[in-house]
Length: 233
Image 1 (cartoon, rainbow, N blue to C red):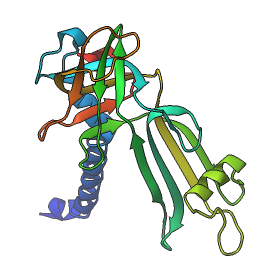
Image 2: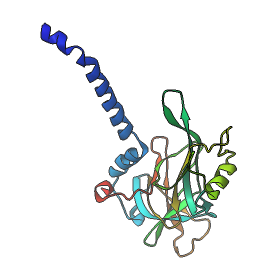
Image 3: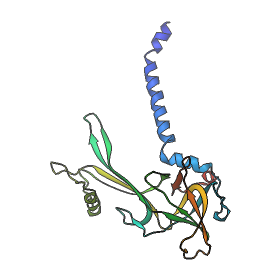
Image 4: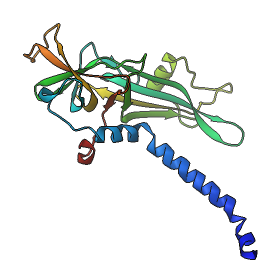
């Protein structure tokens, strides 16, 4: 009985540690990157010409634009998909945290080209028919002793965000930008369909084109992660 009572003070500490480990594992397991990797790892890759109608399929190839490319908000790079986030450092008196004040994704329908074959992909925002994870490749920030660059100021202005507070000090702001550039290698998965072309595609001599689509149970999966061989199973 004496030993049991002596150990009792450690029980709450062990409980807190277990909860922290569980939260950390859940955060890692369910983040967009890990979800996308797990789902793609279960889909066998196929040549575009071998795609079967209504079969869940995965294609890796070069992203190409169907319409006029988008321009990434900060880097101004031509792309078919961008995802950005602007955050401001806030304080609640006891601790600080990053509050997201802008979160935006934009995209166009696009082609994925592998060898001489194409598939067309048409993500939608409403309803959202895709899961995605794009690699962040541009970051910029400002703070009390870190003035925003002219390019960052211009970006903030375009979203009606001021870079200074009431006393004139710089706000602590940070920006992340992830895009799919024209010609970048990406991986897309979805339900395969074959469609008749309404207009010819330069360099493509066939009258039909493969499409990857979503269903109620299966969303499109889009990523520019450099998947390793194990994840390409």
